[in-house]
Amino acid sequence: MCIITISRGSYSSGKEVAEKVAACLHYDCVSRDILLEASDRYEVDEIKLVKAIHDAPSILERRGRKKETYIAYIRSALVSRVRSDNVVYHGLAGHLLLRGIPHVVKVRIIADIDRRSAMEAQREGITLEKARSAIIADDEQRRKWTQSLYGVDPWDSSLYDLVVKVDRLSIADAVDIVCDAAKREAFKTTPASQQKMEDLVTACAVKAALIEEFPEVMVLSEYGNVIIHSASGGRHAQKIRKAVGALETTIGGINSIEVHADGNAPPGSV
Amino acid sequence: MTIIAISSDSYRMGREIGEKISKRLGYRYLDREILKEISAGSGISEEKLLKALEKTPSALGMSARDQAVYLAHIEKKVIGEFLKDNVVCHGLAAHLYVLGVSHVLKVRVLSNPEVLGKELAPGKDLSGDAMEKLIGRNENARKRWSLKAFSLDETDPSNYDMVISLNKIEINEAVKSIAEAVGYKKFKAMSYSLKCLKDEETAAEARTILFPRFPDAQVRANGPTVVVITKGMKREKQKKALIIKEMVGKIPGVNFVEVHIVNDILRQAAESLR
Image 1 (cartoon, rainbow over the protein chains, first blue to last red):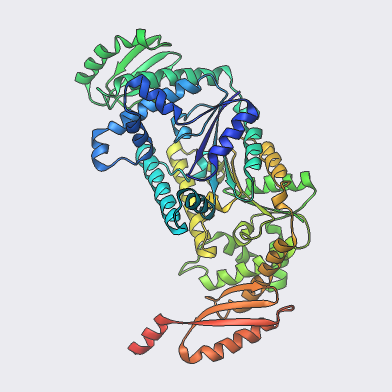
Image 2: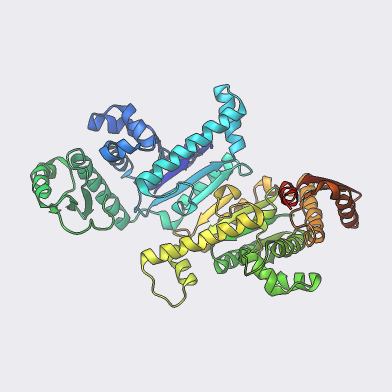
């Protein structure tokens, strides 16, 4: 029992690998449906969520923090969806949105640029050269997105437990390798790792509820004890205290809520 | 005949994994121990060969030409060993010069950051940030080295079939995954992939001969034909081509040497300004 996130570029066969891994392990396979859930739950246009998770924020967007709000919604929907395990997620940024959870197997599927270009050219009916440019532009967009929001490069192998290149290794071989890794002891859900997941669900739900009004808040949950950190000082903290009153009843799993306005946010906050 | 080329951010870790795989599969294990033999055969000291595998050329240290010569000798010997037997190879940069050979399984293993940090700074108690910086510096140094030596980024995952992080996966589990992956049919040697490997060996041998005199030469081999591209002035084209043909033509099995001399624009400009 674990969660598998599959990060992939366009036309890298990651989707096929994810679907086959899910079928092989009898897990659910989720991807963009998370956006629908987030759209329903937070009443935001799906297209805005798609843009938020795909395009790198522009200079204006970075100031407005709208993108971060949408990503908080998506993250909250994702962690709620995968909390009970046995899920393969192959949408964008799963390995980053589920950071800190020990029973998540983080996989990246890559493929040769020529192979990807040929697939794009065939599907879109364009020349190989145009297809190659489109794929490079798409990869660059992903790189900027990850760097601007999380300060890391998605091509950095150390972000993943496993990187598999589908080229000489076939899709079936990649499926075998991922399934085999998922059965390892290190990725089995334990009571402690499940507690971390429950805390992440709570913290993400609180953050999603507050972020529109208080975009700077950072939230941490430990065994249901929620600490909200505001970087905007005491006046804001008062407002947050008023706003969180209702959350204890609307969001499950909360024992207590504290609001802090001094120092840095505790490590592991979302 | 099967070959596994292992790259790692830690020599110690790569060696441990390489030895375990070779034991499990009954393959021969090849690492920097072979530098002794290369040294004996080439007359280049073991220390210089090791330096070529670890350091980037600099104005005060090893020159780019020397590094190219040393690496060519290593390449020639390692490929020769690959042609003999089932081999697990680590620490000799094989993943960078047999990239086009389909039956070589290329794997990169990333150490647990805490273990790597302790290995890079033994005896020091580094904070998380300092350790991260140290690991980053080490990675950048390897990146610079591989770009300079083979025009390839060693840290780029697309140069491997598989990258395994030992953050959560244990060494024995990684060994098992690699040993199983090599059983996939694409990693079985075929006549074409063996020919590619033989061609690489011929090209490496030509480099060992040419690089001391023509360090910018680009060499490719295709069966008994060797193609050499190098820079030169218009007036010396013929002479240079003849010398190269004579030098490379001595390699056993080579019966045709094609030489292309590309105009050396910079030298030409420098001479016209004199």
